[in-house]
Structures are given as C-alpha cells and as structure tokens.
Image 1 (tube, one colour):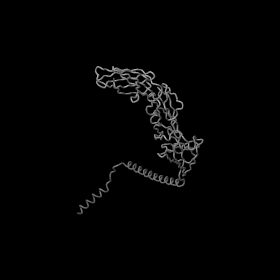
Image 2 (cartoon, one colour):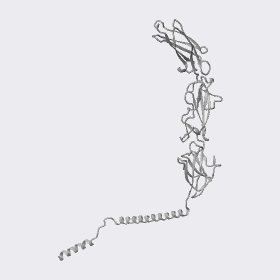
Image 3 (tube, helix red, strand yellow):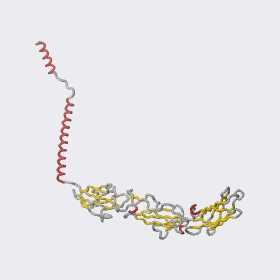
Image 4 (cartoon, helix red, strand yellow):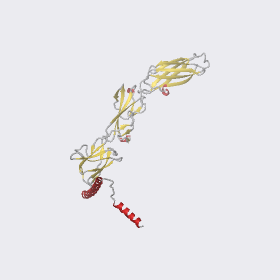
Amino acid sequence: MQRIGRSFWQSTTARTCAPIPFRQPLQAVARRRTMLVRAMRLMVAGVTSAVLMAGMSSAATADDGPQTGTISGVITDRSGYPVSNVLVLAESTEDESIRGSSHTDESGRYTMDVQPDDVLLLAKRESFDDLYLGGRDAASARVITVTAGATVSGADAALTGQTPRSLAPGAGMGGQFDRLGQVAQGGAGEWVDSTGRWISPNRMTFVYQWFRMDGSTPTPITGATSRTYRSSVADLGHFLKIGVTASYSGSSTVYVEGMSRTVVKRSGKVSILSAKSTKKRVIRLKVKVKALVGPTPTGQVRAFCRLTYRGTGQSKKISLKNGIATITLRTNNRTSSKSKYATCVVEYLGDGLTLRQPSLESKRLRMKLK
C-alpha cells in the first residue's frame, strides 16, 4: 500500500510540476488582449456621448418650444366648389424663399407647417391662374406673419381662369334641321371642368350665333343670336351652322360649333286637280305640286296607273310649269277588258331643293274607267 501510494504521489507531482507547453505564441495573446481593451474603451465612449446628446436635446426642447407655426385654409374655384391637388406655397417676403408647402385634399383643405417669417401664400394648379392670397400678384397679396407655435386659419382663396371643356365638341346642334321653316335648336351639350367634374348647364352662360354656309364660308345671320332659329327662304339650299361661346363663373370662354347634316330644303305637297278617262281607256291626270313654305317647286312628276284586274301599268314623267303638270296615260285594253277600275300614283321627283317624303309628296287614287 505504501509503495503504491508513494508511486502515485510521485507520478502526480511530476505531472503537476512539469512545464506546460504554450499552444499559441505570446505575441498573439498580447495582441488580442490589446484589441479587447480598445473595443471596451470605444463602447464606453459611445454610450457616454449618446447620454450627453440626449440630455442636451431634452434641455433644448424644454427651453425653446415649437419651432414652426401653422397655416390652414380652403381653396375653391369661383363657383365655391373645392379644388383638390392645389399646391400652396409660403414665400418669404424678404428673399422669396419657400418657408412651407402643402397640397389640398378632396375637400379643398390644406394645413402646413411654416417657419416663422412674414410670408405670402401662392396657390398653383394646372388649368388655373396662379393666385396670391388676397391679390392677383405679390405686390397686392396679403402678408401673413407666422410665429412659432401659433396657428393662422382662414387662409382661403378662390382660383380663377379655369376653362370648361365640351364632352362632345361640334355637337352644339343636334338632329337634322333641313326643312325650310323648321325651328332649329342649339343644344347646351355636356360640359366638364379642368378637373373632370361635370358642370350643370344651369351654371353656365351661352352666347349663340347662327350662320348660313356659302360653300365653306360661314355668313352670320343678322339677328339670329338665340338658342333657336327658324329657317327662311334665304336659307334654301344652304347648310346651317351654329356657334356657341360657353363660360361659367368668370372662367375662360370656349367656342364650339355645330352644323346641319344636309342643306335646307322645302316641303312639297302633291295634289291631283282632276282625273278623267275616255272610252279608249285613256287616263288624263292634272297634277299640282305646292311648296308648303317658299317659292313654287320646279322639276318633274311621275305618274303610274295600273288596271285593277289583270292589267299592266304605264309610267310617265313630265316637267312642272308653275307647279302644275298634265299627264296622259294609256292602259292595255286587250288583256284587261274586264277591268273597270284603275289605281294611279303620282310622285314628285324633286328639284334638289325639295324634300322627298312620300307622306308629303305622293298621291294615290282609285278611279272608275269608262
């Protein structure tokens, strides 16, 4: 036991007292220790600086208070409707530098922070004139004094110079006003403002002027300055044109035009003055064409008569003289000896200036043959 224990203590002591080999060089260890010390020093310095700056900021805030003032208001057009997306600038009266800016919302309202100064408010938006609050230019504008922490409300303005736009340019005249004596009417049309908002025609002002087209040259018709116009004999064979100048609430004016699709023509009425037949199945018709308005029509009429029982028809054209024409037609009596009646139709062929409408220009009759 003693020998074993002595050997154990001897071996243990030998191991403990034996030199321990270094795994790393001494220079590397020293370098790492130096870097660790430096990092700790930098960390301590950063924390100290942050604490000092926070304390200084809190002291400055507590001592100085708000650094800006506030301006608010509403921007509308001349009709009192709010205008959105208007840029409002606060210009310094000293050096014209921008001390604050904002945009209006859908209700036309804006609020902006402004650095303390004497400022002018300038409102800017596309399709409107630039406007200084309280005047048309900087010289006549209202000066607003802004102080830190104060609020200036009621800085409102009404923009001018907006141009209305027609949704249907050239549609100032609707329909076909091509009948002599007919009342033509100019339409108000559909209008929107520069922001795309619909404008009621009741809020707009319209000035009308009617023209008579001589080829491609419009000639103003004297006294035709209302929304409606009744065509006269002087308009026969001409296109009608209307010019509309539109504006609203001090806005810029817009001019649009509309023109009739066909020339003005007169309406004609056909009447059969007399209808006779002979034993030889000859039919003689006397026809009159009358213009409802304007001079007597010229041109030709055409008559067609047909026997009512297995008969063939005959057609003939003849020119009018003072609006009257006499037409003689012969029927086929060999194949239609049993026919006792004939049906005739008279039609006015027109002269280029008379409307061709069957309800007004043709006449039908049924006559007994001899």
